[in-house]
Length: 295
Image: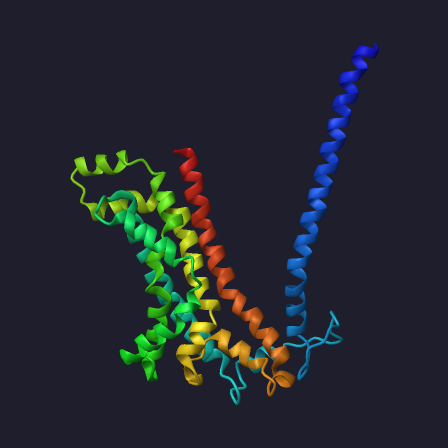
């Protein structure tokens, strides 16, 4: 009887340790979630606080109103938020399309095509990505200035070029995914008379939907939240400000007393396009993953 009770005690002890580990993990994850969520909740709550109002550590406002959201789209005396919003949306959308195409093209050529200097290019791209992007800020600006793209209506074009031209060096994740696709599929397509472009668009891209979704989101978020390059290129041309420049301007000394609560409202509005993009692309991501499992 004593011999049989020993394994039971061991199993009971292991089960107790497993439960304790699970509880500790859930408590830790809950704390991490609260750390991430609390600032966003504070931002949303104070976006409905009546203005003008300065920053306060008080978490819950005493009153709520939508006047801050209304003011962003009606008060243009200091900052034109709708124009900044549309500037950013246009630049981010164009940059997203161009960057995604560049990454797909470069990744396919490195994964499926054998060519001279291929390994050298990958090593060079890896070394370049080790340095922060803003290190090239002044060089990029003077190159754009030499091309006459830093003045007037050409400023949005300069930003698009700045955000998308170097996208080809960010091929590592996409190439790694393409390497997992059997090359026998490409060879079968060639035997059936398909061109390399048809193989790329009809075979490879449909199988890369999950990574395309990832690339679209990251390519859109970069220009949408960037401040450094946008500020350097736009400088003091308020007509071409992006939302990041506008939100930063709302916190400057001369505006913060009036625009802080509007800053909170603007920050909430800025999160909407990225959230919508994620919700739209999430469907394609799930469909692609379910299709790959069934196949």
